[in-house]
Amino acid sequence: TGWSQFDNHFRLVPPQLIVVTGKPNAGKSQWTLSLVANWARLYGLKGAILQFEDDPERNRKDLLRYASAWRKHEGGDDKGVVINEEPKAWVDRMFRSISPNEDLNEENDYDLNWLRATIEEAVVRHCAKWVVIDPWNEIEHLWGRQDTEATYLNRALKMLKRIARRYQIALIVVTHPTKEGANKTSVNDVTLSDINGGQVWSN
Image 1 (tube, rainbow, N blue to C red):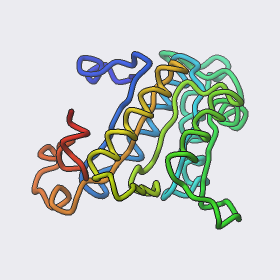
Image 2: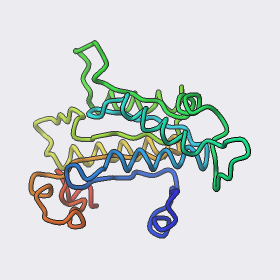
Image 3: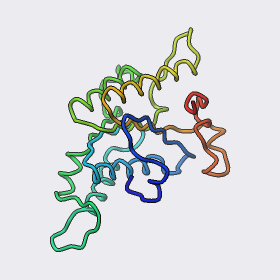
């Protein structure tokens, strides 16, 4: 992961569906951005970030700072895997930002069909090995009268896992907890069960 202590608990083994949650303002998006930046630097894994809330330019600035910090300077004593190109060129090559908020076509529905097509485009056209969906709550979750939220969510997660298997990628879903989960006193108390449809996520 780029963090030796965390490697004891988690390793990247595609195909994989990874869920990131936590209290509001706990740094879910920032932590996830750091994780995929580590993957890009350590293993050369390109990826795409589907951003619904964060300003893409802010994330780009963070990635440029990251690349600058890890850039190999002539005669420097950099330790670990370094970046041997200009930060802007590295960020442009390794990261594809997709921001629905920039789409001028207001008739677009950002539903599961759009999500599937967007992930597949990122993989096929941009050689993405990982895709971040941030946050899941901004996808238009529409289910028919014959469905419950749980059956819809079960179908949605199965779709994501199928895509991950088909393309051998990691899909990272950042999601907000429910109001009850957000109000928990400790950040360590928030679990997958605190997301809407929590039992399905947990299963």
